[in-house]
Length: 183
Image (cartoon, rainbow, N blue to C red; front, side):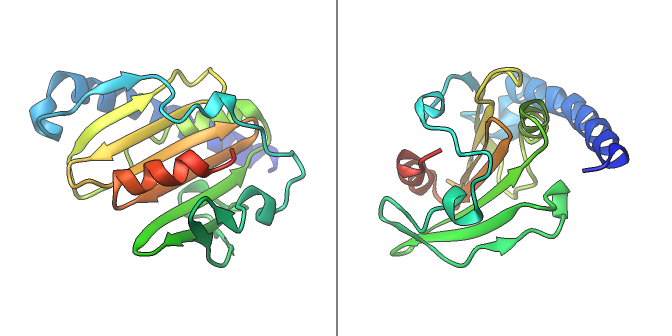
């Protein structure tokens, strides 16, 4: 990443961080707007801090293993830059009818990875937000997990210079996947 790209990522992240604060305030202030059970919670739901770190030079197959518990990974595809994900990879994991989309992106530093996580509180989704669980962006690992009123869920998390994203149409499916994901 060159200097201009780095500055653009930082400026974009700062703008999104301001939006993140507004969204968090809305979730806390107006739960009816996002669903009756909307809440902003703190704490590590998957013990991410207790997991091993991916190796800095890990390949896509090592970062997104072929099997995660009962889930089998499909082909790993390169991300083309949508949403600042250039250089990342994506794969779909399936177990029976259950499906989880996972993305991984290596950034230039842990600080940049935490910034990426902190700017992704709520991605566009058709349902209201039921729950947002987060830790402060300066902590290792930073993460944001969102559960939606329609039962879907996603999580962004950071492990050193890596940013991960996992999403499923079912919070229970995401929970089962995350219980087995190595990082």
